[in-house]
Length: 234
Image (tube, helix red, strand yellow):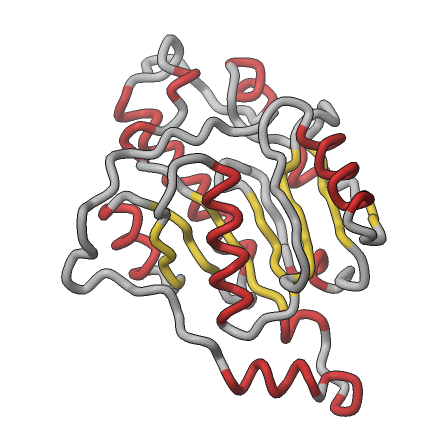
């Protein structure tokens, strides 16, 4: 299952104090060029992208199960879990919500403004920001993974495209790609198969990694039960 992407209205201009898209990191670019001779690991040239919509409008599909406040709190907790799992990799949060931008900046993440609506568009914007910052690999991960463990081990796989499916082998919960070269994100129904085909069509080697801690995302009441989340009183 793939989390819905429901962007809020984009501000007409960047608010004062909101983090801008990072400028190219010349040091990282130089490091990548010298990676083979200097022995840098894949983690040194990998960054994480997290597209996050407004916490206040998150998890709309759970509206009949959880209250608005409960859904917002759940979305925030899950995002914090994924953010912790990403450390020490740099994190780029793609959003169009000022509250999410402030949250991300407060947690040390770079903020990328989502200029166009849609999850695929947000993922592409994040990948481009990571490329401009000098990273060779981008790991795009959903923010609603309640059991997420270390993402660094996925960065260690950075010799091929890595796809981590959801527990139903329908959605794509994490996707590691090189930042160079064309790639069209295919989030939506059956994105696991669609991303495998896209990677193959682009001539990328593909590795499917099964990660139980990343397989569960939260879209349905059954997902909440699987995660052990008590919905009584919510």
